[in-house]
Length: 296
Image (cartoon, rainbow, N blue to C red; front, side, top):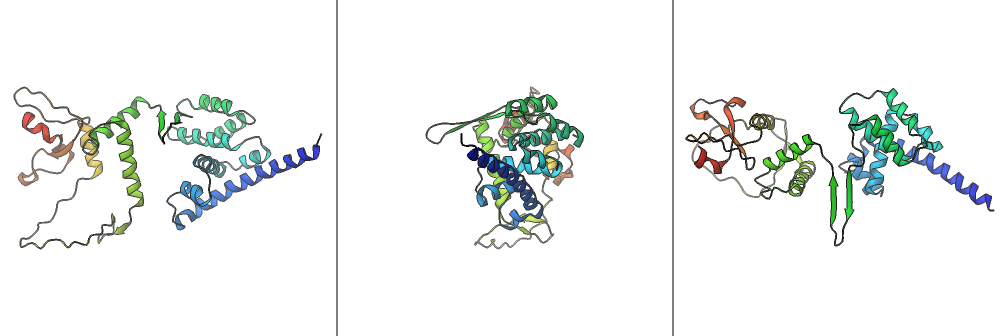
């Protein structure tokens, strides 16, 4: 029996655990100092995957574990001893983070749960966390790789989350006429990435605006351009949409039938500004241009 080999491996495993805990501390230092942003990476996740070569799942586990280590330093000793592993800590951080959005989770409860999952399998760890926080979702997403570069992604949503998806479908009706959930998700991803990657410059008022490069000069006009009205804010737009439950408010004057369409929605003034109308939420309604001839 080669006991020396066993001892060498055991010593290497201990060193690996200690190094892992040290890496988590360094990840926290990188995030605190914003080093990843200074180096041109848009997020800590991008920095770990591109600059350090971690896989997506490995990077995500280390980010979650590092943040929990920052909140609960006592887990460093548990990681080094092997009482807790990286997957358990990442799962615990995910559960704590989700639960924190619903109600405050005090440090004492976190420590109690961390003590409960020590030495447990991944399956039992999930069970303990799910029992402690029934409202959170653990492993609710499933990814299946298919031939020819195809991938199937499935996940569970609550009734409230489904309503959010339906509202997004209605608001993106212009650019996603097919109304498939996949199209809506991809469109939102494109918009989010564009908002994070487009360069921004300071306007004359001091506010940040997206920079626009154009070689064309604006056409010269012989008439005086009046001062533009203040654009409708996103919060006001949401208020108008919510008021009508994301439905077109046009009503047939004869049958009194309401359009009720949920796609291609716009908002417009009930009483035009030119005739004394205000830009308050009460003076706006949801409309669908195609419905005006039939319902206006």
